[in-house]
Image 1 (cartoon, helix red, strand yellow):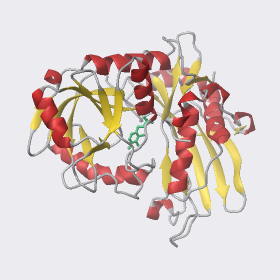
Image 2: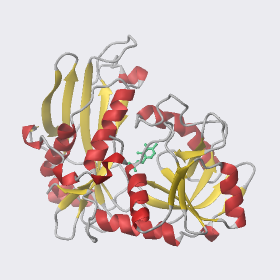
Image 3: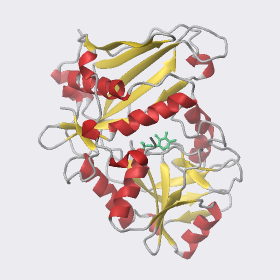
Image 4: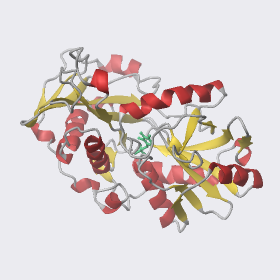
Length: 377
Ligand SMILES: *Cc1c(COP(=O)(O)O)cnc(C)c1O
């Protein structure tokens, strides 16, 4: 099931095997005071909770050994296939604390299903949806004290799976480890939302036809780091990739999907071609905008039309979206040939409106009319 197809499914009804995880408490778990100190200033992905969840898969045996145990370094054979051939996938989602202290996930079954589509592409075993959700619920129950409560903070969850078999032959590994780690995160933009500048990748592409662009695999990110450096060198924070075949069409940023807003209020985003990662935030944004009676079009969008649209005033806003940064305004688009400012470099109303509507649902400030939220505590 694609993410768009799963729009109508109820997150609350997704199955969970949380009860079958064997919880072995961390004997050196942080004290309340130590934890409070660690979460005082939250940078993204630097602080981790006391525990991690894990499972292992073996060829011919399937998944077993569901556990929650102390967070800590892994023992990995130097010949573990992942270190050589990058047979690895991951997911990213958040747990949100509501004002009444309850804790909720946003469309976790969509992450579970995308994880399995990524698994198929990387020749990894699929993980039952109930184990994906079960691992999250078991870990959050154990590390409940780590879910931050300050505004716009959350517990970032990182499920991942990799080839741990010690074997240098090139074939899908016969031993696979699944792990889930969690990191309390503060607002992505400390000190308020600032529009980002984007550099158009020159001579590099994120993914090609038939490649792994639609899978959430570490290898895609490895390939995006050099172009990302180009962006930094040109004074930009993010890189925009064009399609590999024609080098003309917008695809996405290194880890976020992209939208443009026309002067008449129409919103456009690149259609899914197999080289773009189908974001759950992207789908939620489209759904909410459509319910607001806004026209949302998935289509091929050329860099030329975006550049001229910004220059002529026909394109009034550009934004990027993904779980980590939610919805991020783009204030500037640059390449060796041009350097254009969008909406005077300020965040636009449609961008900030959709950001508000989405975070209101996630943080329980607005009714969840879509059945997207699942209570876990
Ligand atoms: C994860 C990811 C996104 C955003 O997906 P969400 O489900 O919205 O978090 C976009 N692009 C890439 C390359 C990604 O890896």
